[in-house]
Image (cartoon, rainbow, N blue to C red; front, side):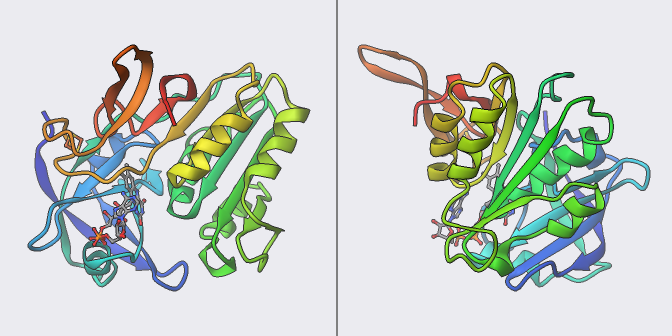
Length: 259
Ligand SMILES: Cc1cc2nc3c(=O)[nH]c(=O)nc-3n(C[C@H](O)[C@H](O)[C@H](O)COP(=O)(O)OP(=O)(O)OC[C@H]3O[C@@H](n4cnc5c(N)ncnc54)[C@H](O)[C@@H]3O)c2cc1C
Ligand code: FES
């Protein structure tokens, strides 16, 4: 059973306007797998789910990279080094490691980029197959962590809604092109639901696993309130089955989900 505890903020980075990455020290949170999340207590509100942007087991530090969209994320982004956070985690089902010899595509959209970087950092160095990364955001400044990917010797393909960097539009045409060239491939993606739905369709013919990390609104984060359910297979005469993103996910196989 997950329990709440306090972690110290070692460092605060500002990777882009309206974003902050809190680097926290915790021997507990470094047990996380990429794609899992941490539920952070914000004053007077429900906890807010945030993915791990990096998991540094050697230094016992993890990253929590937030984009300010409301009062909870604003409160987090205003924290300073030396302060403490009340957290619950690591929670949920993370990504499974990539399968050895298959070409591998990582796709991140907006604040879906941090868990994709965590997957690259965890498994990228030992890969034995080709790897490509596609990142998308509304505009150039919101394409976060691109230098972190480059530090791992990966040059990401970029897409922005307004064309201010890379391909103008969504990541989907870039994913479609990669899928057509790598039919034996595997894919991991995280981003807003419409992006994941389109990536899921584009990746339907891949021979390897397609893992999708959802960013659903949450309540309890531990499977009790059903605030986070999404439609899932199998779809029977009475409709789909529902799965909890907080405990059955946030990472699902594409064939488990009904978009
Ligand atoms: C598993 C998981 C991992 C996540 N990881 C990250 C992360 O690494 N970094 C990060 O910045 N955010 C992440 N999010 C989203 C983050 O939890 C929300 O942005 C946050 O809870 C909003 O809280 P708030 O109080 O700032 O905004 P609120 O005042 O609650 O909402 C402000 C606006 O944001 C929208 N919103 C709120 N929550 C979500 C959501 N989950 N998905 C889509 N729209 C939402 C609301 O509809 C509203 O329009 C993650 C969500 C999930 C479920
Ligand atoms: S957030 Fe409560 S069941 Fe998932």
